Length: 234
Ligand SMILES: Nc1nc2c(ncn2[C@@H]2O[C@H](COP(=O)(O)OP(=O)(O)OP(=O)(O)O)[C@@H](O)[C@H]2O)c(=O)[nH]1
Ligand SMILES: [Mg+2]
Image (cartoon, rainbow, N blue to C red; front, top):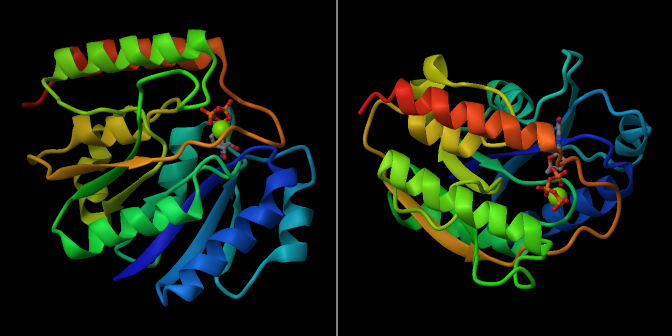
């Protein structure tokens, strides 16, 4: 199977080189047919210049100029540019490891899932490299999400997943399209019952660059959940 790997970035100049090198290396080793698509939300740190120094024949870079910048919209922008039918999404700050990408791909290749999620083991804040406050808020949100939407997912907020393009296309019209939770948005907007598999991943701490997580994103998520709850389609 062939994969389009979508990597949304905002001010990740310090991580682009290693991301291209590490992800490409393992995909080449495993003889996977792929393209890597960076969607840059008009970064202010020379990301595009850095990209040009390290690009390969299998990488692409798209600048998204729409304002305000938005992670979900960037991912969807990347989906629309993808040439393959299997869409993988991962962070561009090396928190998602190339080894885990291979594990997700293996699971996606050999079993007929609509979505495979790279899930963080949310058992202690240290294990998932989150500060205690973010860890507890994440856990609480996961619990509320599962309850509200009758799901049973360990990490419905993950930014690391693989999805069939047709599942995305199926949900497209109903997407909320704001904030960080594009995976949950797609799951809640899908018109069919989805076959979802979770694979545990190692979530590394961010070495370089800055987190873009803000209070605004949490508020967007709460509004998203309220809207989705009142427009539930199942
Ligand atoms: N295109 C685009 N990418 C974004 C935006 N916000 C974040 N990103 C990228 O999305 C990925 C995840 O964002 P992070 O800020 O690392 O979020 P996080 O991993 O939850 O937070 P940390 O653990 O603190 O790193 C990274 O590759 C970011 O560069 C955005 O508004 N637009
Ligand atoms: Mg990060």
